[in-house]
Length: 261
Image (cartoon, rainbow, N blue to C red; front, side, top):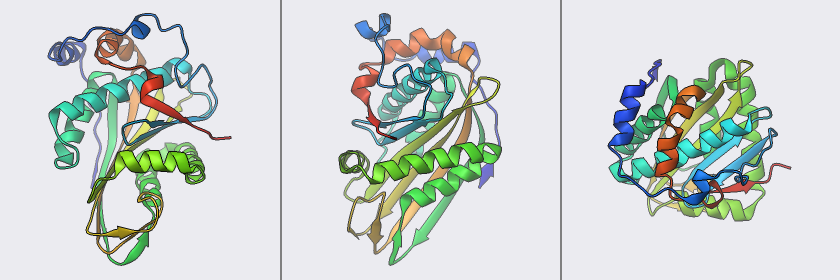
């Protein structure tokens, strides 16, 4: 299923969204952000993985540091907000609806939403190939830049046992596997563009290796969705004080670097 949409929150709608959130005490690092975050000040290719959540974010060459920090801040807030609205393991649809609502309130606009299912029995399945497939579908003309970036990140993760273990521990339950993938580029006009891909898997039994990278399953059902998104950075900046006020940990505490060298 492919749905094209371009829906942005107005400033008034965003204000209502943030005003409905509980008031939190700002962390000191958020009021004085001179110290570099896990993303640093680089504009080179970098990739991050959630330390406690199943999310991978990749940045292509040329994405400005301030756009990278915005992407990380929004992802961190949206994870926390969605967790207050639904249990991802038992109600993934409601969880993603809340996640998307938060993303839009923070400045993202959505286009080319794609949702598909995949069923297989008694075969070897590579989850990264399923993600690359749906990302390419959603990315459209941007696929030429986004897909190779994501492929490189996956290749590096496969070679790092510590990262594989971290991802596996955060993403896999007894019968459910979940993850989000966000490869980001910056357009010639200076707009941050990403494809947010989500994968939800249920299975009866599995064996051999980390589930995302090489999974031999007797029964497997996969729901996958992807949305291409553009960041209105001006909207983000107008709402940044609300966003920072909701974060309870720094980017360094939330993300770990993936070595792409």
